[in-house]
Structure formats: C-alpha cells, structure tokens
Image (tube, rainbow, N blue to C red; front, side, top):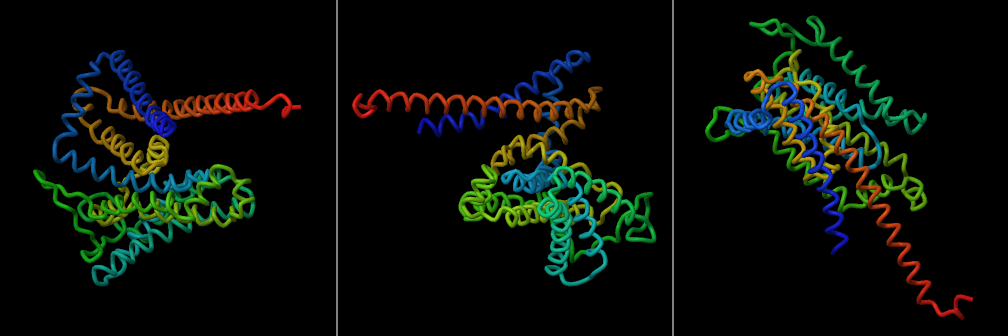
Length: 370
C-alpha cells in the first residue's frame, strides 16, 4: 500500500511542481515587463469562464486529447512519432477532398471521410516505421522529415486548379465544401449559441479504449513490455518488429482522424486557415500527462485554457506570448522533474535491495555461510 501511495505521489508531484515553477517564471517575466501577474491570471480565468470561450476550450481540448493519445500510443513502446503534425494535415485534407467530392447518404458519407483520413494518416506513419524496421532509420528523423514533406504536399495540392478552389466572398482557398450529409451536428451548450463538436465524444471513447487496450489486453502487455525492455520482450517471445508496425500505424490512424472534429463540425473544408501546429502542442501534452489517459485529459484542458484565454491578454496590453512561455516552461520543468523523480526512485530501490541483502546475510547461520 505504501509503495502504491509513494508511486502515486511521485506521479502527480512532478506535473504539479512543474506547473508551479512555470507560474513562478511567468510571474517574474510579467513583473519584469511592468505587468501584475495576479491581474493577468485573473483576466485569463474570467475570460475562460465566459460560456462562449468555455465552448472553444472544450473543442480545443478534444482535438488536443485525440492527437496526444496518438502520440502516447507510440511513447508507451518508446516509439517517438514526432510526425503527428504531418499525419494530422494529410488526414484532414484527404478527408476534406473525399468529403467534398462525393454525395451519399449521411452515415456513409461521414464514414467514408473518417476511413479516408485514418487510412491516409496510417500510411503516412507507416512510411516511417517501415524505414525503421527494415533499414534501421530513426523514427524521430524520418517523422520530422515527413512533416515537412506533408506540409509541402498539402501546399502543392491546396491550389486552384488542383484540389482546391477560391472560397466565395474571401481571398481564402480551400477544398470543395462538404455537403450536409457529411457534416456532424454539434452538441448545444447552455447559455451560448456555440456548440461542442459532435465528434468530441470520440475523445472520451478513445481515452477509455486506450486505457483498456494498454492495461487489460495481451497487446497492451506486449506494448508495455517492449517499451520497458526490448531485449527482454524479444526473449519472452514478442515480435518487436510486428509490434512497432502495428503501434505506429495505429498512432498514425488516430492522428489522421484528429482533424475531423474541426473539419466535420465547423470548417467543412480544408483551407489555408485550417488549424495547424496542433500536433506539436499535443506532444507536450502527452509528456505532461505521462501517457496516461486521465493525465492527458488534464494536460489537454490546461493547454486549451492557455491557448484560448491568452487572447484576452492582448486586449489588456499584455503580450499573449506569455502563455506560450508558460507552456514551454511547463514542458521543460516536467521533463526535469520526471528525471529527478526517476533517479530518486532508483536510489530508493537500490537502498531497499541493499538492506534486504544485508538482512538476509545477517540472518544466515555462520556454518551455513561457510
């Protein structure tokens, strides 16, 4: 029981301390620039408490959460899928193109878009894992390069005369709009005219499924075993190559899906102003949440709060980049805190083993020792 409590304390202490330290650094920066920290934080909280802002935060949380789960799946096996941004963009654009090109009944229209986005995301992630498995190329390098390739591919096809068209009444460019049968209605939120993305419910289902798969299935056991020690997993009969391919494909499929709540719930087209950079933030969210579905949920909400509520700072002559500084310091602090906690736990375990060995030696009769 004490071991469980000690482990839980170590798990939650690191992010709490990291958050406290980041607020301290942010306060120092605000004071140095001539602003009152408590006043700025109070403005953000008040702005976030407004119904319209809160709806935006919930929608942003759902997107962050889905992408962070995609990252966490790979992290549990020590696979660093840094390419979720490229998979997110490729999946969203492919889904938008297919959704705008077909006109079929509602359920099948949405399913076709979902399937397209997930398959494209999985294929894009599959390129990196195949390079890793069969050529030994680091997935970190390949996924980063694939991000830039994806950005270039999207930019190439997102032009009039190719897969995009000029949106009437604006200078924006986007794919043909998705018909009503391919749209997912939002969930009304009391006290506001805004709605929560209809596909936001998938984030909840995905979190539960992720927890169950990792902790209650053979696949999850092999995933955790490979992440803990690949040589030991190989000895125990785990096909590490096959696991790497499956995990990265699943991660890519989830990342490909992650843009659909926005696409099918608000945008209905993939245009130049479609949200970008979401996946890079999700990597930080997964790290802060320690790849646990509950931890990721709190982290996603925190980052959504900082992203949405920071808009009010600029209206009060406070640079909104302060929120970006806070996010960066949180990530840096939590990485350091986790490493310190890990080293402390190792020292504690060594002392415990040493004490047990000394106790065993002391209790052994002299004649038995000889």
